Structure formats: structure tokens, C-alpha cells
Length: 224
Image (cartoon, rainbow, N blue to C red; front, side):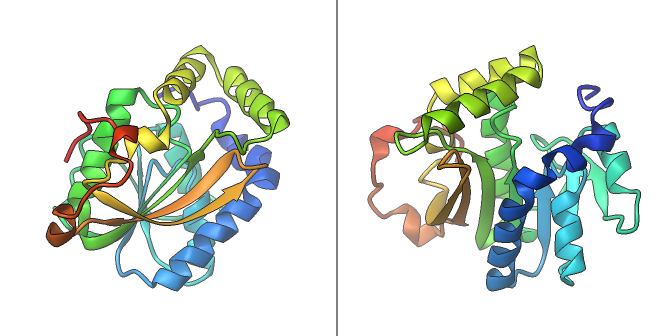
């Protein structure tokens, strides 16, 4: 995971103007939920974890980038992060009340993104919550925002851009999120409707027997 070795020390400084409102939304949702154990999957530099910590909310993070984790462990507010693969977490089943994943799914190979969802489902407690921040390009997205997103992803590098294009082509979050596993709770949009903060709840066994809505929107091969 050397992709971020050069940019990691400047990552938060570059993104802060764009991420401030999103980070605050995530904080507000977490404060409303009052979860016990929280994990930030693909936590990067730990910026969201720091904001939670400043508001007396403890959480841990995992990431596979050594460069990002070094940044997370430094500064005035270091946070607890572990080097782990999000597709195969060395964590107990049903160990967390809330999982978060921000801007990691669009830059990941499609099959790996599906595996991340499978692992998050495994480590969440029954009726636990999943909070996602990622691109959601729809008819409501302005043309300016759509162009800006494509430019940002292109500048991030060829592999990154290819994964983003595949994410978009396959239907993004609407296809990645398996309705047999998660129930939608709330959406908050940013960036002229190009970014969504999406809260979902893990389906209980009784809910799994309920009829699925808009079933044709989802990947029938998505993991349970």
C-alpha cells in the first residue's frame, strides 16, 4: 500500500476544506446513535477518529497503508489504529455496534469492496449500524460536481481512476449494498449531490424474511 506514501503527510490538510461538513455530519450521527464499540474501516490518517475523540467518543480504526497509519499515530491527538486488511479482519464476530467506512469503496476493486461489506456484516452486532461516506453520482448530481469528481479521481492515479470508473459503471453503492444484509436508515448529501453520508442498519433474522424492495437494483451475487 505505497500509493499514499508521498501524499499521506498532507492528506488531511488538502482535503479539510471539502471534508469539514461531512466529518461534522458523521459526528452528529454517531452522537445521536450513542453506540458502544465503534470501528472505522479503512480509517486512513484517522481524521474522523480524531474528531470523535475530541468529542469524547472512543473508537478504533484499521487500515492497510503504513503511511496513513503513521500519520494517525502522530500529532496532538493520536488515535488507536491497527494495520489490518478490511477484506479479512482479525476481529471477533458481532464485536461492534457501529462500523464506518469513508471514501474507500470507490477506490477498491469491486470484488474486494464486496468482501469489505461481508466482513463488516460479520463484525457488527445484531441491529448494529453501518455509516458510509462515498460518491453517489445520480441524476440529481450537478454537472460541475460530476466533472470535479472525475478530475479528482483521475489525478489520484491510473489504478485509482480505473477502480472509480468500475465502481460507477457497476452502479456504486446501490449495487454494493446487499438489501438482505442492511436496511437503509438515512441519507445526507454533500458536494452538489455527489457525495452521500449513508446510515444503514444490519438486518435482523426476522427482517431477512421481509420482501426486498427494488431487488433488481442489487447484485444477486453480493455476499450474505
